[in-house]
Length: 84
Image 1: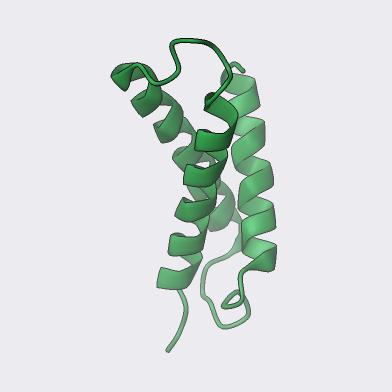
Image 2: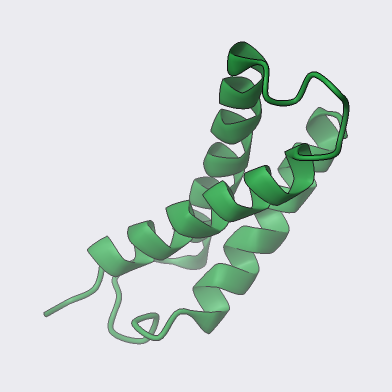
């Protein structure tokens, strides 16, 4: 998976995470904030995995780790922007 795949994965996870988040309606976070959080989460996971050496064998762990980190980033971002 190259960088275009990381960006596409981040956009899809950002959009799905924003749409499915239970605090979305009370949140001040717009969809572009969730998309940005998804892309940044996936990109940072890929960079960290390459630095640590977690992804040395190819794409075996890259997809699930990048997906999980992007989803966590979107959930935390939308949750932090929610009104209480």
